[in-house]
Length: 243
Length: 292
Image (cartoon, rainbow over all chains, first blue to last red; front, side):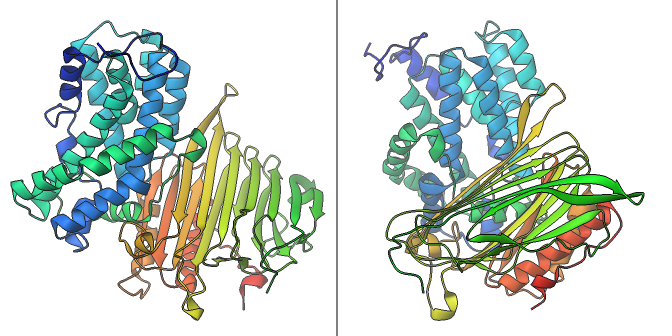
């Protein structure tokens, strides 16, 4: 086992072991039953408006999201929920969950984040009824809508997945889900989708490195394209996806 | 034109407190405290909608902001006070060789009160470095409504915003009955000037004008959202312009990205009127400084 990459040991030690890898694969899997496959995060509108019509344009959109967009901020927020869970600061976890709630750009994106968070938290409780979080805090989190980034951070900390790996897993599962949505929408061949995901490795890694260093003061996003696409998706005439 | 490097920076201040009191048996919103530091000045209050709602016009006497300039606003509304604040002219943010120009607005709205912050547009020159921050605290039953329309680059001169930074942060908290504060809306917009973001559909899509309209502290019906959408669709807007509306937890948000400040202003004024109809059934009176 390799020592976690941090200066002082956290109260609950993360693992760099086959067990942690298997847990990460499960948490980041598109088969995780949280309904991620039913959301396109505005891509359905962008395809409909012919702003995204090729693997290249899709790649551009996803890379812009990673560099300046909502996913960059969300991943940084997930990390904060992970860190709060790791030191068992449940008030802080709750504060960040409220922050996540208040920073959802549109109603569709807020409902998506709430639904996926609710499902993941429920699943986590069913898999492991003895979570470290006290039932009082858990009840309050559920009453206030536990968002997806919150539940993911909580789960990754509970499963002792390394911080950096949890972050990469979060970003990779986001990219996988959106590429799968775009493969259906544009449409693209399965291989083209996999090729894009493969080519995104460097940008996912670069984004993770930046996100790890972001200070709270630097949580910001360039959100015009996503915001408008998501607002317009809510009234799109014919829809396959819920966002 | 201001000097490229300003040896002296403006640190302007404006504090305004509004209270509601009974005058001749009528609820009246009056300014109970005012304090200004140059280059900010305040025109005498107007009451075009009757004594209940006070209209104030802020004047920036230096013409624009350079890197290092800072403006601080503090607006407080007592119980049931109704105020609308606007600006006398468009704001200009000149290009900077590094330092940031900053505008900070603190707002406190007591219960039953409503502040409308409806400034005229801001023109952000290419290579400007600008940050505007708005922090709103609503007591239970308090409302805040605000818009911002920004032109990025002096498009009339063929300039695009491809270098510099524009940041706009709005945070609205609501005080809970137990005294704690809960964030209702956190908007941390950042536009790093670059040719890629300028051209990308993810960023500006080659549109120089962006605008946001936010209303918080009220539950919004489907009907209001639908009317706002229809108001946009009834504009004869070019296909390159886009706009949308969505519901926030206890509020609503409109965004515009396009080419025309007057189109954004026209739609936002319709949204404002629709909200007034929802609140009081009375139309809002457009201030004289907008009629030019």
